Length: 163
Image (tube, rainbow, N blue to C red; front, side, top):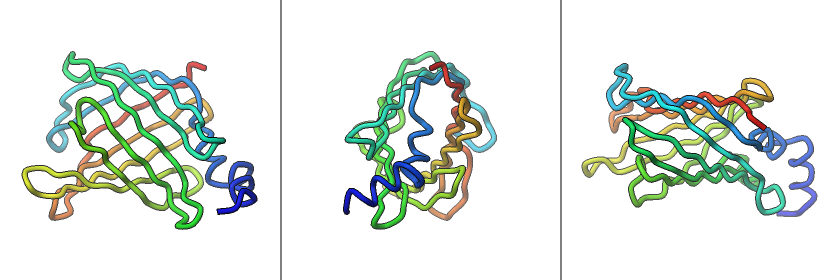
């Protein structure tokens, strides 16, 4: 992929959109283990920075679930060839020793990622949506998708920019 396409994307395209995420963030994360039954609500801190000449955003975060600390990393990007947002996600609570790869199209205000994970020998879907509400507010929402297609909210983080 030529640098001209990347430069254009950094100035007026999907990579510019990704760069709206760059900064230090704090907020609240809500977690559901069962549909419509809030299991936890805890503070979350995250830092997002551009890496590899702006090609990707590295999201490092830490928080707790039921008073147990955890941390995680996600890499967000936009593949110019397939015209899709992509992510790789790991953390010390949800993912165990797995890496979740996700990919999907997005629009001007939302970045979407669709992946899957193994649960009791079945594949479950995991849909993540990142919405830039304003320059100083982000909402990251993830939905569990059962093998038969039923979807319910799993995790939602409301971030406010701290710098």
